[in-house]
Image (cartoon, rainbow, N blue to C red):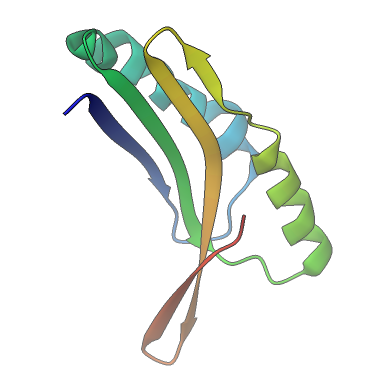
Length: 103
């Protein structure tokens, strides 16, 4: 096809924090831009950014983190399309785990 999709997933065993948005995800994107994307110069490169972490239960903290995620806007650089950050929260109840897309 004409697309190459790369999913960057930051998986945490606890609650998410802003350093993931400010430091970790940008480093991963930079690495992909430097080493992977150039191999696909003839295709559309789509970079999806995900955080999978424990669901924030305090409403204000959840809203603040989602707002911070949503401020990481999509970017287009030539054939490269960096998508907005998606936060998927999980909750563990007994031995069951549930996932919820939060933004």
